[in-house]
Image (cartoon, rainbow over all chains, first blue to last red; front, side, top):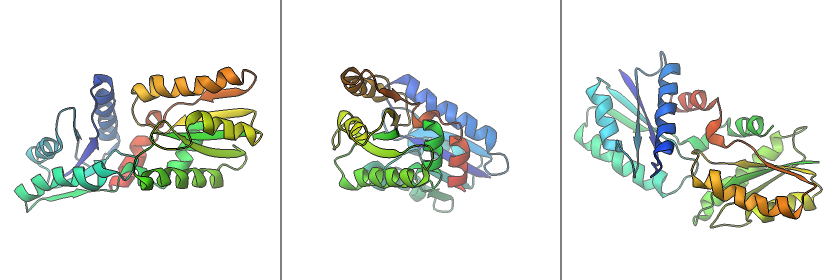
Length: 119
Length: 119
């Protein structure tokens, strides 16, 4: 089974964290045939943490976990903080495929998405 | 003439701000027939500021400026800080059409974009 873990920054504002939960739910609806499990996690300020999110995926039977950074810029969070958190579980489960995908800001379609939004 | 002003948070990391400049350049390339002018600005930590970005658009001949928040969550920056900065220029130029578009996080296509990225 394949899992997708959406990782956002996390906020002190409950509403912001709920936006992520809602987005993960939409991802789950549309992921048929691509991911069997969709979960979300936060880097800081909110729960579940990244290691807890990965653990949830594994407990639900995932052999593969794709950790997707919901971040726009290649900052310290993307370059250092998320990999550090993911490494905790990679070390704990060396036989599982736990990997980080490119972050949202790298998406080729972003210009078209933005232009459509602006019109 | 219509202008699009991409507004990002701004970072102490030059590379992050350069990502925004590069994205604005890609937007300009693809905006033919939709926007005559594409500029970028930062809410904080980097230049140009939002009022300066709007001013650039107007100086280049824009009668309409669409301010696009390059933000994922409906946080204080989107709800209060960006409108405050935009209001400075709306007050200064009451006859110009200076308005804020929905923020990136509202885009309907995001789940599909994320699933494609994750695969």
